[in-house]
Image (cartoon, rainbow, N blue to C red):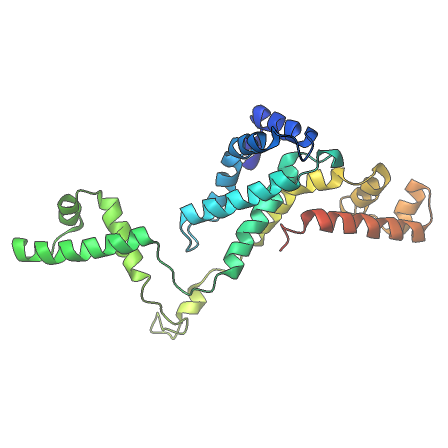
Length: 257
C-alpha cells in the first residue's frame, strides 16, 4: 500500500486539520481537537514507520518516533500556505525517523522481546536435551514454550546479533571478504520520498516560477530558451530559477537530510 492509498480516504482527518487550523491558539476547544487530529492521522505515521522497519530498531520504537513527527506536523501546519497536510506531514515524519537513526550509535541492538525469547529458548534447549536424549528440534522447542516455530526461528536469528563479524572476514577460498557481499545504498528509496512531496512543494511556487522549473528540469531547456518563452531576459530567468529552487529546498529539506 502506498502513501497515496492511505491518504486518499482521510476526509475526516483532513477536516479535523482544517478545523484546527481555523481555531485561535488560545481557543478552549483546541487541545481536544488537536488530539483527535493526531489520532486520525496515526495510520500515516505507522505506514511511514513501517518503511524503516527491519533496520535494527524495534518497530514500536519507530512508531513512537513517527508519532512525534506527526505531532510536530500537526502543531506547525499552516493551512494558509496552500499546501495539503500530507505534503507537509510526510517530510516532517520522515525527517524525524531519519534523525532517530542518525543519532543512534549502537553497533548491535536487540529488542527486549528477542532478548527474553533467546533466554527462554536456551533454557528449553537445555531441559529438552536431557529429557529427549538428543538435541531438540525447532518443533520440540516451540511445543515446549507453547509458541510458533516461526517465533523460535526469530529468537535463534536474534541471538546471532550478539556476535558481530568483521567485514574483512573471509567467506570463500578465493579470498572474497564479507564486506564484498554487502549491497549498496539504493538511491531510488530517497527519490520515491522526494517524488511524494514534490507536487505540494511545486504548489508553493507562483505560476511563473513553476513554469520555469518545469521547462528547465522536465523540458531540459536552457535558460536562454526559457527566457524566449517567458518573455524576460536570461539573467532574470536565472534569478527566478534560483529563487524557486530555494523555496523547493526549504520545503524538501527534511526529506533530503
